[in-house]
Length: 214
Image (tube, rainbow, N blue to C red):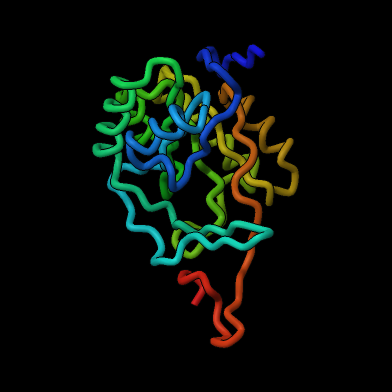
């Protein structure tokens, strides 16, 4: 069966895309997902300019019924990510790679977008919806159509690459936010970011299992 398709003009052998997360920090892990997992495209771990430590472990919890994460946007920064993309592109010619970017303020998206534009990434994904860094960044930009559109406009102004915006299921109307991003220049929408919030409690300790909630 032919499952080939296109995403913003980029050919894919199938519509399965590795989402931005813990399996896409290095070229080696992304290549493995393509070669052994059969992904049609991959997305880099969300990256900012200078890098970010993220939350302390444990950042990933599993249960027979769910998986919970609170990674905290950890990443090595755009320079190291650029190198991983170069390695990936040298070894993989058929599965496109998306570069997910984030910034602390609306204006800060200009710098990271310019840096992303200079990478070999095929597409740019704009992360405005991370749900577990509100203590650092405030409410996700994806919850407000006007702010989401403002970010999209800045990104669109600073790159020639196609742009997808990653939206939040917690928005009052995700359709309204998506439309605002489209009108601001987005070429596509990534739907959706992590569903939540959620919490796992260690009953014997009477504390949350996730370290960032203790």
